[in-house]
Image 1 (cartoon, rainbow, N blue to C red):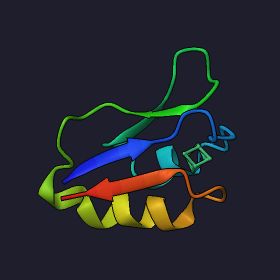
Image 2: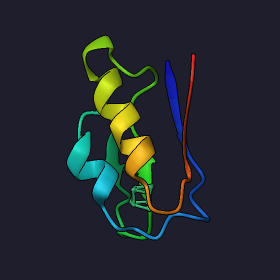
Image 3: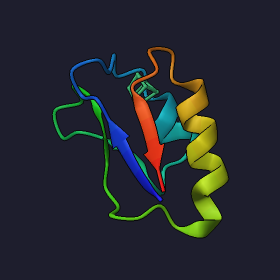
Image 4: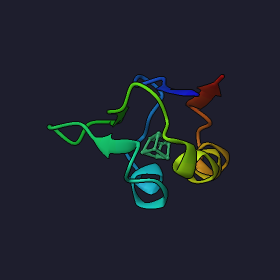
Length: 64
Ligand code: SF4
């Protein structure tokens, strides 16, 4: 599974990075969240889904 973030729509609330820090982190300038793994590790898929469902502006997507 791969994770994606529409950086332009991200409001940098940091929620995804708190819910699933193994997949999401804030950009160096803190302007937006970013995905820093190629593939979401099996054990973090549920957390990544929680992060996607919790994003207030719905800019996180997951694809098999
Ligand atoms: S939860 Fe959504 S809006 Fe908040 S930092 Fe993550 S991608 Fe950006």
